Amino acid sequence: MLYYLLMALSSLLSIPAIYLAVEERDLVKAVIFSAVQSTLYAFLYYLLMAPDIFLTYIPVGVGLYTALILILIKKTERYESD
Amino acid sequence: MSSTLRNIVVIVTLTLMVVGLAVVLTVGGFGFSLPPHNVRALATIFLNTTLNLDANYRYVSAMSPEAVTAIVWDYRGLDTLFETSVMFIAIVGALAISRGATEKLLKTSPPVLGMSLITKTITRITIVMILAVGASIALHGHLTPGGGFQGGATIAVVPMLLIIIFSIYLFSKMITIYKAVTLRSVGLIGIALSSFIVLIIAALYGGSAYIFQNQPKLHSHYGLPSYAEPILLGGTLLFFNVFETLAVAFGFAALFILFTIPEDAVKSAIMGEE
Image (cartoon, rainbow over the protein chains, first blue to last red):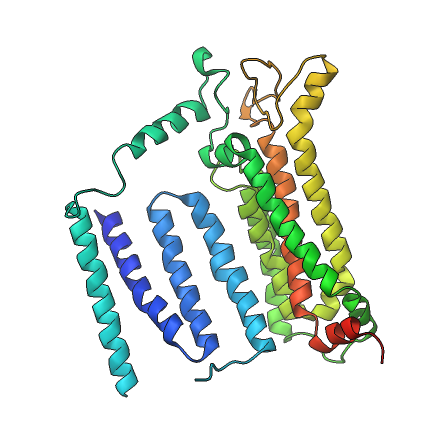
């Protein structure tokens, strides 16, 4: 029962993170929201008993992807214009 | 102020929609349930054939306790080989565009390098831990969750930390992009050789085998040992995991070097001397 509650909680918490990542004009903040969503999804995969996906999701979704996008933002523009 | 209010309204609406959809799906309101009940039959097949010491299953079983690694490198090995090659070809393309840029980088060196002493010291400690965790994920890939890609992606965090905290100038003195791509090619050649190893053994004994064969099959009784008394070896899976780790870790390292080369170095390398 606790597993199901945690699953529901992490999937519901990921909804605002996704929405804010799409909506945010400051791209650095958007990347951080995206990393929060990745962390929640990683927990979700762990609770769904898919530890292999969990082990891929943590370094790729939270570490490598975030760092790569931050490097690219540094090379281009930080704020999205209208 | 009004944009904050709008955000809250949208988030609440989205959350309510997801909760409603979940409730309707759970009680079967659409006339079907997710996941469908017959998906269990597929799981039963994999659980029966992944590690089965029974004589009836000897020529069907993959003889590895880790179902995911067995599926990735045994049941659908050719798929995984092409997945790895796609990333390799992408890196070759990126390398072809920015060729000559790293040599320019090594000639220049700014006076201040990297972040503060505190971050550098902490990074020196954590790098060892990350390497140990990555190696354990990769080398135990045929026994516990994990495998070549997972271990390689974990190890790839190390070059990223080194580049960001100790600067690209110091890192490209340690590992040049050509060294990284060479080691990645070694990994890919190792994967290719591991897929033929049982065929080579069979050819030496005058028999025949399949490509990507791991354990003995019905019409070809050749295979790598899967079980040396106290430990499970997993046949070719261990080789695949080791070489895939090499390929993924150095592939990501090459990508990070490419992405962090300063723009003017790349530009002058592409445009040529003026």
